[in-house]
Amino acid sequence: MTAVQHVIDARVRDIGGFRVRRVLPAGARRLVGPFIYLDHMGPVELAAGSGLDVPPHPHIGLETVTYLFDGELEHRDSVGSHQLIAPGAINWMTAGRGVVHSERTATAARTRAVRLHGLQIWVALPRDQEQVEPAFSHYPASALPELERGGARVRVLAGSAYEASSPVKTASALFYLDVALAAGASLTLPAEYEERAVYVVRGEVSCGPERAAEARMLVLAPGADVTLGAEGPAHVVVFGGAPIDGPRHIWWNFVSSSREHIERAKQDWKAGRFPKVPGDDAEPVPLPE
Image 1: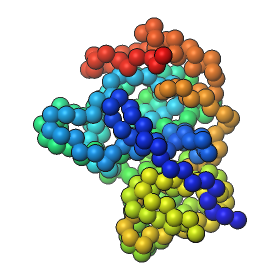
Image 2 (image 1 turned 135 degrees about the vertical axis):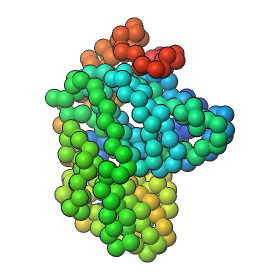
Image 3 (image 1 turned 90 degrees about the vertical axis):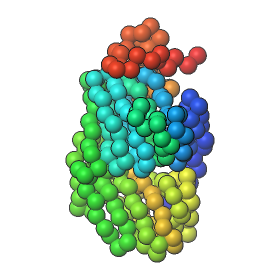
Image 4 (image 1 turned 180 degrees about the horizontal axis):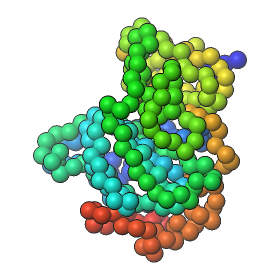
């Protein structure tokens, strides 16, 4: 049995003047476990006086997960959260029935050149939790377990792996690992999760006869014994979980098992019925026409 079911290359997308590499959803695979969206931001050098600005915009039916390798972002949301996102921390926002948030380069950081590099992930909520109250949780880098396994440094960002568990609270069975492989290192991946994928952030890894370089994702076969190898230094994230409980519709920033919920969210956003973001009075992102 081959260990790799799908090979997916990231596609460049523009999000308001900022280019990202989008991996999920893809034609070959819409979800991996509950993970329904993955954007690779940067690495990019933001010149002094400039910055990233993502104005207030809405979400329903999902959880956003922001994880930075370099740089920082200022998060504000309609729950009232105000958090500076730093490298290595996990920032987990539950949209539920509806939330609005913005992410920007902080004012103090705009006085100097800044390198920005990270991942933005969406996790689809189980059907019975799609309408929960919105919430935001921040976990500093120091709170996340880190371990060494034969030349691989593994940070457990969410879920459990290698007898280590993240404190991050999740709505479904999933895992999310940040893995740095030294030259010549190998790592056998956890097999207890039915759906798994490996995304290459930097360098190149092998998985049996398959090789994957930067911006490529390998979707792994359920139950397959998988060992990653690296001839040179490499950096990957490994993630997945149990299959989601039924199909999901995705339109713009909205995810739901119900098309009616998405249509209602579209009308509510257009009519200004979503809550405001305290501290960010900028013009919100308009509904795409």
